[in-house]
Length: 431
Ligand code: LLP
Image (tube, rainbow, N blue to C red; front, top):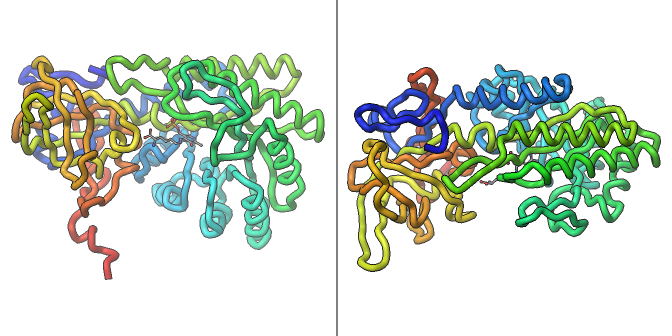
């Protein structure tokens, strides 16, 4: 099993956080997202402990809610003392509806609308991360009209490509996000931001990528960012108090994946940062991190019902399920790999290799190919593991499939936190 919260009962059923997945599929229907609340909370605490132990607690973990945005997630992270990163008016609205304090929110987006900026200003979002010069101009006007000064950060491209085999540092990262360091664009943006009357530049932000398995690219990003903060101090006489180092720690999707635990990653980042601060005699900044996947990814599974099995001799065997790219588009988008098993025979050997196909009218609608699985047929319950991040949040109504339900499991008990959409929901906005 990928994570310790998954076990097998005497009956051979897959349990998550002590709850029987076969019973959950029967009671709630499928497709069903099942999240383990205990594991989510442990992950939140795991991050906070490192900040406390390595950095005297001078930081804020902001859950990157793009990984899983629903009211209950904001309530959980809020009750654990975390903030949240929101990337749209919709995420901001959900967070506020859930009672999340606005000052603990970080607002992102490389193409925020005026309405979204207004909403962030009016509701008092703690930090708005600005991505480009026109946004600074628009935000300054909006803040001025509201009679406010807003706290902003600038998104910087530190020039680290973490997704290469050996990560590389280059000024030529082709990305639509943020201001480039190497070209001098970032320094110009800092000067521009400092000049606006209704903007208070409190710090810098960077995010070097997602599903990163190693510590060193992160540590290097921290060094690069601190060096830049030091050059701002030297050239402009301004000491910025905050540094937001984004998200990105990877999780174990398959048996072959070997990610560094996020605790090791954050520890390495904070050590690199402290060393850089000491070397430059720079006051240690207040740090923010925005983990998404590493908080919820491994805490979730998706349950499906097997509808049919189709063997094409000498080609492959398809196991067809009642969901697919509409609830998990990650194979279709990125050829992402997952582990899966038959939840009602979880103790049996996964003796076959199959392709798991979805129900959408699209050949590429697969959960995965060449996946080890117990021999499966109609009526079996299929569990796909480590689907807690970027599954529900990227779900769609393609083919007018209603979005699936989310249940949260705690101490063996499950409760619905997002209802399954109905056909009525599907036509709600049709005129
Ligand atoms: N902060 C910023 C500014 C980000 O852009 C992201 C992710 C995060 C934090 C959170 O990163 P995490 O800790 O989850 O790696 N849909 C893709 C992932 C896209 C991530 C985009 N940004 C997937 O399914 O793999």
